[in-house]
Length: 193
Image (cartoon, rainbow, N blue to C red; front, side, top):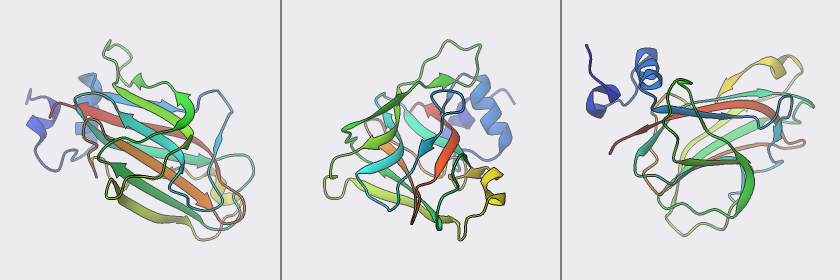
């Protein structure tokens, strides 16, 4: 049973919770969350490819495999339905954003992440054919105070896409009247390609 890194990346990349636990144990799983306690980040009032809620940029030589993106509404409840978009870039394009510090999910591991993370990011107009939409979903059709406490996993399944070295991943959230404000925890694995 002592195989490592998900049995040399057989598909699907992440089959179940045991695979995630194995990646954490090996020091190959990383995460980011809100930059300061009780400080949420706010999405947009409409989708714009140049305004991302969270951006992960793969600046290393390993594949970045998304594991989860848990978002919980905080503060003022969003107005209107909330929509999430997740896209990847073959070649990273980035302008600015508020830095997030990635950490190893195995606090005993000294391995660092090669990802560069930020929130409330401004992006350039993407080069034609560079961006691939990998998820678009309505999170809530109608928003209520009761829905505010429900954590949402914006990634449909661990390992649902792979961000190649030099690429990027964007998470967009928007609501039609008031942009949603979030607490969040995002995790990914970094695996040899």
